[in-house]
Image 1 (cartoon, rainbow over the protein chains, first blue to last red):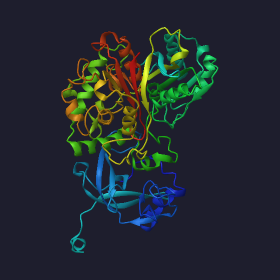
Image 2: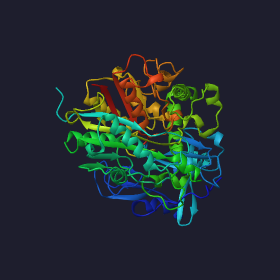
Image 3: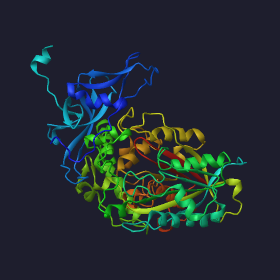
Image 4: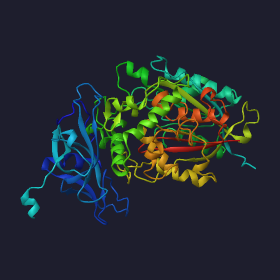
Length: 144
Length: 393
């Protein structure tokens, strides 16, 4: 299942705009401090560690692992198709850099903590939702 | 010798609590407020402060609907201080704000209340407690959850639960002990909405809501209002009942204020409030005689138990196992009125009301043995949390 019908879209503007629209170019954009390198999600215009204002959205690999998850089985709204898998994904760039997302292309019973996943984008109007799907490295990638 | 501006709880009150009462939220609030004011031996004209959470804010139907202005006008109050609004340390933040106001000398008697009418709102075919049901764009902290389908606190708590299971081996049976215990307590509480016995088998067989949380891990939307009066100790010579001393209170927030961003996702922001609570008292977790701990979802009680130091990190599961320690005659009588899981979702104020009853010895059939002297109340989940330590004076 890809869409969850009837869900509101994000109020994408200011700091959050890059995150929600980077998918148009196939990029998952996460704010990062240009001074100390801290990744900031949800995005902020200042680094909470060093107070630098040199914070800009940077593309990440889009790879990560499932830090935790839940299979939502309750139909909260009319037309909502259940079940679907919600996950907190820890991105490969940094331990502790986490975001909540929905998993796609996976049977709920196959999800586990530590599962390698990769971003895929789903466009709804002008928003590109970064969803994640299980990712097995190809032999070519393993060789690198 | 108490400081002149010590804060006490001088009165408590509660409206009818139930499913689909079909009454206005303000009507319920008036019932609770007048009962609390009368219980304290005060008159409405003595009340010079009002504090509530989340105010008239109503992002989801039934979540509130009554603000400071509503009750001020209904009761003709003359207020020297008031406070409402969503951004505080959770449901008990309103009480904690009142304590601060009393200690600062801004008010003598503060009416604190929390009102819900989610059950009635749901019968009007509107889903309460689900964010984004209205279909408009969503911003703020919800922007990072709702567009993916994480629309309910059940989802956010399910994620925390799964991680707790993963790190510490916590089990559904251990969570179930909470649900079974509150149901046993609810059987003795005439106001509790679900009073039939619940067995572990029924718990384990219940339909799942958001794995690994099942129906009985989730609290019950109800209609009801609860009120307490926070008074300046030396401004209350004519009180009807011995007041309860607020021995410590905390609304600390150190970690990142999101459901999914607390550094260790088996914990939450309430852990900061719990840690700070003990810095304001000589009492220790071992002194707690009765506890009212938030159970909007079972995992929140688990996290609070660990945060409060009632058991070690990751040890709440074994602590709960079998349910004997948390029974009314156990080491830590917990949610003795039935909690939100069985008595109904009164958003922490129900726990506060029940702990006050227990400390006064007024809990009737469900009174714990040897009238307790020290009670803890903790409310909130995820990005908010506040805690109170109450003692008999």
